[in-house]
Image (cartoon, rainbow, N blue to C red; front, side):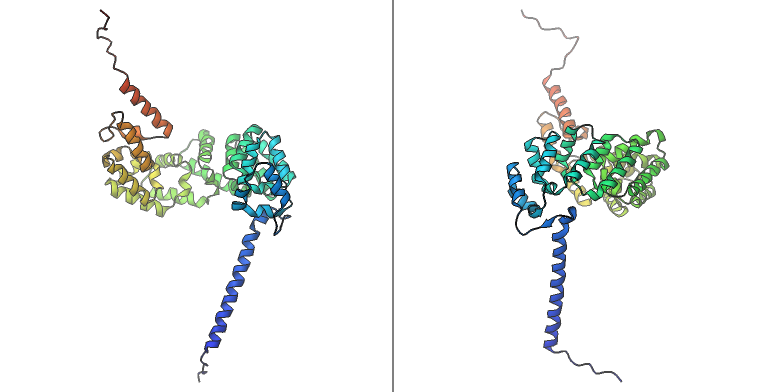
Length: 394
């Protein structure tokens, strides 16, 4: 016999709805508390006050720091106690930083004032173990303040990672660059970096790389993309297996791995499959031709279809043929705006890209300016004929 269920009244439904709202409100309050407390993880001993720390505000003002910028972007720092504004300024000044540099650092990274003086001194000594001089260190702090003013809990990991990379005989300049641009790779356990470095070394050797050149190869890879260390090793293996299945030989894979400048770990088989299919369909080439194009322009592997479509359209609209693009695919690395500007500059000096080589478009701004200057000189300088009689005044 089935139990009869009583019909739910409107009052019951409203009570359930009110309970649900209370649950959501409680959840949101707890979440907001966690978000508010997040910056305090940097300083477990710091306390958050409802009023600004006037001493901090005055000291920052005396250092010509943009207080309004700090309030707008990281106002929570001004409510912290204790703060060590004077100590931070004195440390930077002792390293040779000017007043304007100190003000700039504290404006973009005011959290520095929450760093204990002992921790700051320990960081200074740690960085000087790989930095050539204090002037260079000040330059690094100016560009990457968050990498220098870190939690004291990371100090041991930083030391261990520095020792590990030094054991690989990596250049100190490379180690410094890694610490500055990818500080996460130094704040984590050294074992994590050891696994990724071994994976890179094994891939290099399995693809036929010479042992004698491995250190230089690794240095280039890490300097070109310091974040490669933060990627799972499995990503590298999967991407190499995918490219091998696409017909790239061992030697070609090594060349590609080097040319991708460490960005091979930013890819995944699905995105590469779509990108390769789009490029082949647009250019109307064979798989063998496509591999040759990719080897010349590996960037085609990691540009999404929407960017490739925009750049193909821009080049074709400028009068460049698809056969020219296939012949010089590296032109796809340039944005449409840059291509149009360079084409305009070249045409003002009589060079027509529709009938000439696209190589002149390629390269960095500096490379292009050199090519442009050569064309300009060639146009302005008359061709000298050594057998023609010289004109003499009558």
